[in-house]
Image (tube, rainbow, N blue to C red; front, side, top):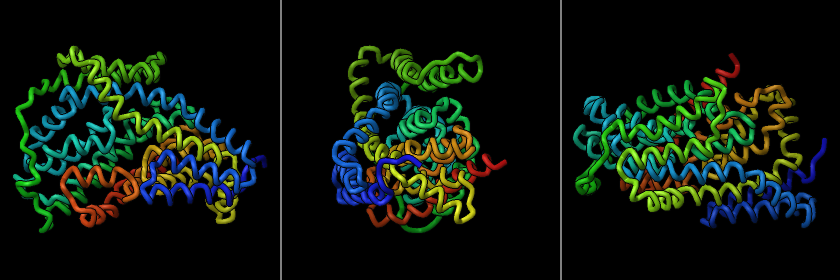
Amino acid sequence: MDYSFSTIGALLGLTVSIVLIVRKVQPAYSLILGALIGGIIGGGGLAMTVDTMVSGAQSMMSSVLRILTSGILAGALIKTGSAEKIAETIVEKLGEKRAVAAISIAAMIICAVGVFVDISVITVAPIALAIGKKAGLSKSGVLLAMIGGGKAGNIVSPNPNTIAASEAFGVDLTSLMLENAVPAIFALAVTILLASMLAKKSGGAIGESDLEAQPDKSLPGFLPAILGPVVVIFLLALRPIAGISIDPLIALPVGGAVSILITGHAKNTVSIMEFGLSKVVGVSVLLIGTGTIAGIIKTSALQYDVINILEAMNMPAFVLAPLAGVLMAGATASTTAGATVASQTFAATLISSGVSALSAAAMVHAGATVVDSLPHGSFFHATGGAVNMTIEERMKLIPFEACIGLTSTIVSVVIFMI
């Protein structure tokens, strides 16, 4: 058993990070300080602690590069109106009678094609609120439909959390996206069921003040809107289909460029790229901070002690995968940070225990969607603000969100066990 830091030090470092994040200290700084304190208390000494933190941050660079280039696709989908057009078309085609399903599917697809989950909710919100008011749905039901759909889409998307998990486990991004396709469908079904129940309850009605006055927009047609994401999916699918490997570093910005050109926004390319960068730079910085604490935890005795506890409880080693995703995402209130810390820390242990890298990555990734929307994270506030919901109202949705994330996690585990 070879480790540099004690379990107590790693846990204290993580606790410090959580406390600081809860107290609204910038998450990246919170994680860096937690890593420093955890390493020193864990017995590594100042020099070894700093070296381990730097190594941990360096291990995130390939993920950060891919995430930075993914900003071109995200920026293109949002600024060209493609994301809004996709959502609008889905809602229109399914109609008012299937409003909850339409809203959920729209959010799922927008997230699945490469828009971050919180941005997906913000993008779909104006359309969802308008149709929700016409159909007499409650605000809580509409928001849960968007969040649940986003969670379902997030585990089959080329988003930062998926990229980070695939990098840590050394698996193909496309394969990881496909691995959670069935769990995503189950999560979507549970979303529609729960959101439909909430939507019919009295109270929390959508008012005129919740509807934004939408200026006339020149949105692209549906086919041009969807072409960019289709190109990305095609390029990423070439590896499992034809053995041709196109790295996400190439596929994601190419899809963004196609979206910009085909929708007639070539003259706005620079501003779209700048917008896209602004949407991913925060996640990239967060991942660097996440790498520092992951480095300390990964080289501590924590993973060995957790395995020993599972063995003492006669629980199989694979349980560590979803459990790590759940706990780390809850601690950081972030799917990306939670999936990254859990993957970086336990990938080697899970693989050495006989769990396939792809299955382990899928279970960690699904687990990271269970309690990732706690109030000390930005997702909680961004989604609540998208529908003008109070903190008290937003808090009531957390158990329903956890049920949706838990559904995809359980299905992911069942698929592994079959």
